[in-house]
Image (cartoon, rainbow, N blue to C red; front, side):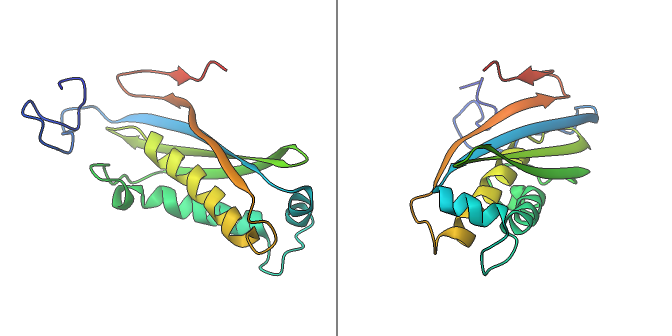
Amino acid sequence: MSELTHFDEAGASRMVDTSAKPETLREARASARMKMALATARLIRDRGLAKGDVLEVARLAGIMAAKRTGELIPLCHPLPITGATIDFRFEADDTLLIEAVVRVLGRTGVEMEALTAASVAALTVYDMCKSVDRGMTIERVRLEEKSGGKSGHFTRAD
């Protein structure tokens, strides 16, 4: 089990000790896609839902989630993130792309924070639009890129 860092030699769970690692600038970018009815996408674009500006509420939810990832994911370090952005764009008439970028000057990466931010932003869009479209789907939540730290730079190939 030695390659799984959240378990010790006996298989017991542990929080990885990062105290010996140097602080470096670390960044992660994650994305999520949402499929929805064309009418729902139009309402989002036109800010036509009674609950308000869906994307601005989702942006705030994603940023707040990034800041609280250590409280949500067992064994995830609570990090003093130095930046978080959530961006939205329609890839197709019925497909919303959500992209989260999170940065920290720290001893461990922010991949989980970026993934959490993208996921919670997508869940917020769903929550705000479910009264008009319960058939929406959240798809392909994934890490797109990360930099910093011992493992170096990763960019998804596709």
